[in-house]
Image 1 (tube, rainbow, N blue to C red):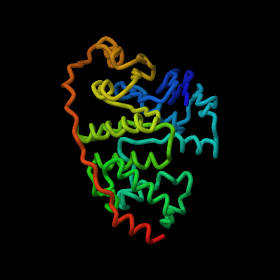
Image 2: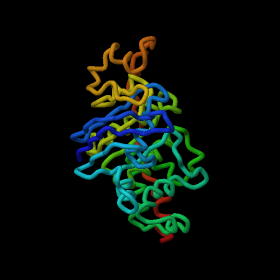
Image 3: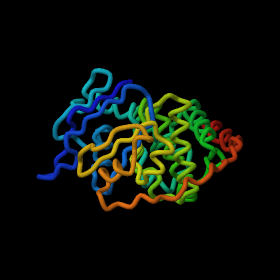
Image 4: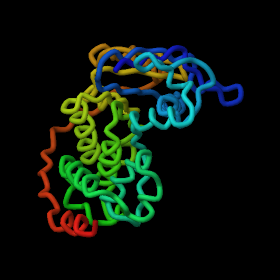
Length: 276
């Protein structure tokens, strides 16, 4: 899949939240977008997913301008382009596996979710994805009972239920402690490495972007001011992104945390499947 942004712009009144953004992603990779608050990172991602309309420009994906899509064609694109949000956007009072199954709403419809009419195959696949992300033992719990890091992994599992070509993550670790932030970033990296999916993540630290991403795009005041490999993100380049007065004396990256793989929730899976 090739993605090419051509002068993508979003105006809010007279303010250019995104100003003529252009870039090409010519193969699956993990891309980090960095910049200060208000730089336009979230607006750019929301335009890619069509949650926000562009004021002008084109986003060409395999020859199609996805910014011009409407109706069913736009919804089909959104199924191929899953979104993970900073605040998880889970339904807190329902169980984890049902939240994951909501990733199929675009394909199954709201009535399926309202009356819990998921197929045996859908439930089995949702539990398998949770198992892959190391949280299958949480499947029966309400989402609100989980930690922030676990909830974010549930949100990633919900995105994977769509079987997307692209995963967009909007500040996925901004509200997490360092240990859970590392687990979530390692999860996103594995999704790229193991599945060959493009992952584009808005990130708030240079260290995180350097460690996990193949490519970094830096934004300042709506414009792309840096686009290159992590080793090209020098102090001078970072100051171009964040401003001349910024301090980049970051702490060293913490060592990797081994997360034990949880056993699959056999009894819960059997109970759900027996109700079909």
